[in-house]
Length: 358
Ligand SMILES: [Zn+2]
Image 1: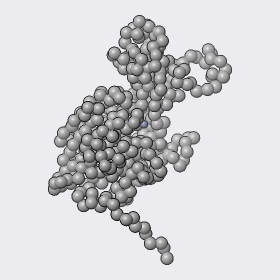
Image 2: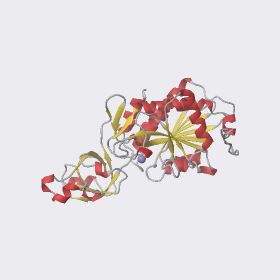
Image 3: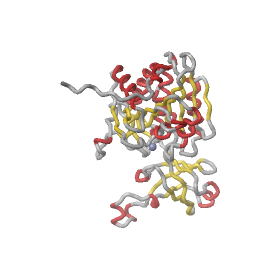
Image 4: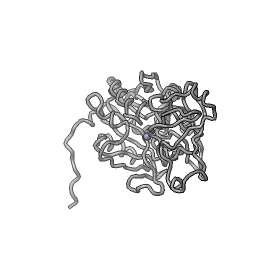
C-alpha cells in the first residue's frame, strides 16, 4: 500500500487522546500484514513485533509514533448548543469547521459564530476565544440532552485532500504522518533482512502527557528507540530559526533528550543515501514521546526524526509526501545496520574531538 493510502486512512480516523480505540483498531489492521504479531495493550498502544535474522540475543529496536490527535471536550450543554472546554487544538481555527461529537452516538455538527452584522465593532476586530465557540448539532434541545453530556469528545471532521504536487492536507497529520512513516518503513523491510528485532509502537496519550510512551517503553524495554513525530514547517510569519522547509526532507533532533551516537549513526546513514534532511537543535524537552522513552526502565538510547508540517494542531495541517517517504527510506536503510556490535558501540565512551586545524 502506498504511504499516501496509509496517511489518508489514518488521518480521517477518530482518535482523541484518551479515546484512541477506533484509530488503534485501524493501525493494528495496517500493521498486521507487516509484522509477525500485533497486540493492543490495556491503554490501546498498538504494538507490532517483527523478528530479525541475527543471532540471539538480538537487539530490540523500537519505532514509536503517536496515534492520538488534538481534541476538545464538551464543557456544557446549553439547550440545543454545546460549549467547549480547554483543547489542545488551535481553537482560533475551529470556527467554520464541521465537527463530530462522540456522544452516546457520533453526531455531526458545525462550529459557527454570529454574523459580523450582529457583533460590536471591537468584537469584529479580534479572534474568537474558546468560550465564544458554540457547536450546533442541528437538533433540538431534548435530542441533544439525550445524546450528549459534558466531557464528550469533539473532533474536527475533515476530509483528507491532495493539494498540488506532493502536498497533502487534513487533520491529525500530527502524528498520523509519523505512524504512516513507521508502516512504510516496515513495508520496505519486508524484502530486506535485518539482524535486530523490531517493535513498532503506535502510542497513545502523547498530546496529554506521553502516557503511552511511558508505559509501552517500560513494558517493552527496547535496547534502543527511534521516535517519529512532526515539527514546524516554514510558513509566513513563523520564526525561520524554529522551522524547516516543507519538502526539504525529514529532520533529525539533536540535544540532551536524545542519544548523541545514535543520532550520529542516523546522520551517517542519511549521508550515505545522499538524503536531504534537516537538523533540529533541541536544548531541552523535545516535546515528543522521546522525552518519556529516554528515561524508561533505567534509560533507553533514543533518537527523534521529525516531519515538517504547516499549521500544526489545526484542521488543515499540511505535509509533503516527499518528507515522509524520505524518512521511511532513511529508517529502512538504517535498521539493517543495527546488530549486537552497533548496540555495544552505544555504550558510554569518553567523547573525542577532531584535531584543531594547524
Ligand atoms: Zn501535537
